[in-house]
Image: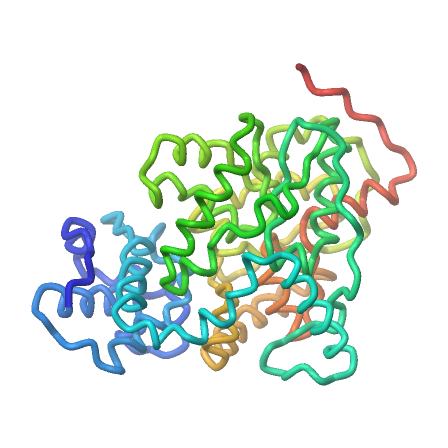
Length: 395
């Protein structure tokens, strides 16, 4: 089978093994076929030597969390993320039946009204203890949501699909923080309902391209920055230039910032606050640390807002959420999370700050108290006894 992989990218791997300690599936299994170099060797066998795509080979590709923790560790700069995405795209196209559960699970994401209705029904089921435990649906899932409001046109705030239905309070907190720095905010709302990140992970790349084209068309009216408070969404949107291969897509991606990344550039405009009396551990979402590589911004914006900011001792190893991975691969996701829980226990924080909804829900399902960095900053702004108003930004 031709996996349609770039030969230069495929041959960049020299099989040195430096990626192994950074791969969550290898760490919990010890199985070479569940490691980056093992998966790349299987790609070579299939594409270059005509090896059959057996059940075992397919399982090797499908069990990758796509955390991309191997990429910063690779001395050869192997673009593993592109290789595994292209491989899964080809397999999904050649055998569409293999992705039926992913297609079914992701179908509502481009239909915001249907998604909100279904989410509200799921929230009621969770409160009545009727939701299957393997889904990890939090009982705090909202039945109703506060409406979005526009306060100005300095920046867009991307609200997306699942996060807007399940964690809209994070968007509202993020808007509160950006406004406190003196900027007006336009939430994107239903104009740009989904970025396609989860579809890309599942190999449904054609759907991702359609969502990308729709979003670019919806937000092309001006060149204001687009702030994203979900690490996975931000990574996907920054990759639209490569995905679509157009100048317009490149220009769009250049406007995308993780909300912490952008706020770190303007942190001096935030009011001076009394730090929250909390010890906060930072959990770096993989797509913030390994893909966008802007995770230090979280520390810059949080440090003045809390009493103690502490690090986990696992060097950013994945928590096992992986978008829909925790639903499709619950056993591996649980084993990977177990390692993260050990790191959190050793840090002994009051709360864990996580800038990705999937991570926070996956950890929350195991009893970890999590908050988005924007929620912590908004709380500090709201409870501080003495605030200094921020100066308005230059025009």
